[in-house]
Length: 128
View (spheres, rainbow, N blue to C red):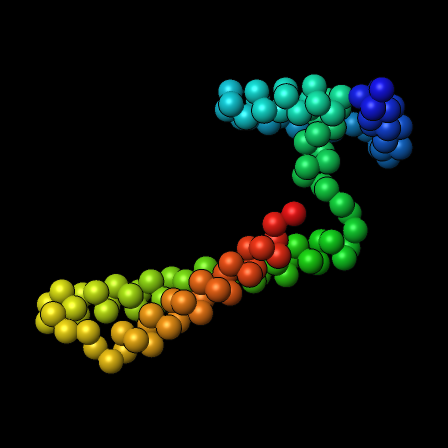
């Protein structure tokens, strides 16, 4: 029953499209296409409807701004993680050449722990 309801909703949406319909060609692997077929069967929507919904999602400006902020936060975390990884490599290189752990090693490992806690918190917030 819900499949027919979804189809009707999609047809109504198609009638509301302003202007002429545009066609887009999409390339995907066989595995991705199989997943799309499965979603079509589960939802009763066409591949086109699923892809439009996935691509455009919510046109809500608040949701779009939230996604933009989340992406910016993830990119900042990625840069910080690269910096920490570089510091860990320097500590390892120093230890391998001198067999000594430098004083900055403790600070680097504290940063690793702190970053791990923050990263996990952010990931948990992003998980639906």
